[in-house]
Length: 387
Image (cartoon, rainbow, N blue to C red; front, side, top):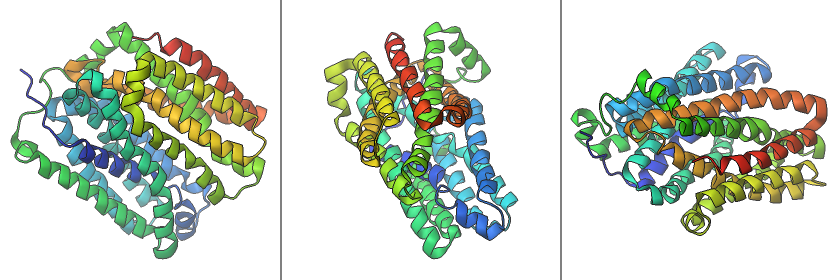
């Protein structure tokens, strides 16, 4: 017998997503400061990003089953408190090794937050409304992408990189405590919000036996390979190397992606009702293909800025449908299904970054973006047929 999932405001869930996302992006502007303090090169601090991402992705194997067995919001709340604690402790790191270990531990627990929050939405929101509610939830993620870099950079520049860890760590832990308080007694002694006996390795086996689920996981992998790890991470470098912008100027232009994404979250409900999921997959995918193709041929940074708005809007219309479908891939073990989706996305991101780095070395940024555009066009036509 399944216990009813606890009702928690979507805005608190979005705030938890913001806290998790901000903890992920905190390092972006701090690498030169950390490198200077520890006497290493900036490239030498890349281990901090690798440690976080490896544990974040690898931990997905356990995240879903834990959420299904113990309660999705319960595990997410504990994960936020631990993530905040590890981030605060990073303030006291006296070596790059210590900081790397703490970032690795942070990535391990941070990986539980967003997949389990998405699974909770799947438990509590009817499917015909789910895409719109996921759009509201994504506001937290989008705002984290837009605000964390500038705020962390300002704090680090004026007060030291340790201050950024202290501020964001305390904020993240506070949101975890707030979520735990909202759950009340259920946080510590209530029944889990998912059916017992439906999680673990057997749940993964059941998921992989479903051909529709396998196609969805392949779609997540391609999404990660072409976009998360393929084209998107290299746009700032493209602006710096091909248009001779500073890192700060390139960062402001890339932030236009977040503005486009935020625009989509405001009208997601109407978009779903007007075009349906298949329409959003096709239109969003082809819009991404067009945006990447035009980026490859952009004559100036102003064009890239306008295209960032388009790419942000189209990406969230496309990716949001895949996320909604992940929440319904295996309702009896929803946390496991969404974690498997996140794991496939991460695997695609990892392999895509390696492949596209080689393509850029051989064919330049324009060639890489053109390949990503062609891949997205084919992907958009195929994925709309995936149930």
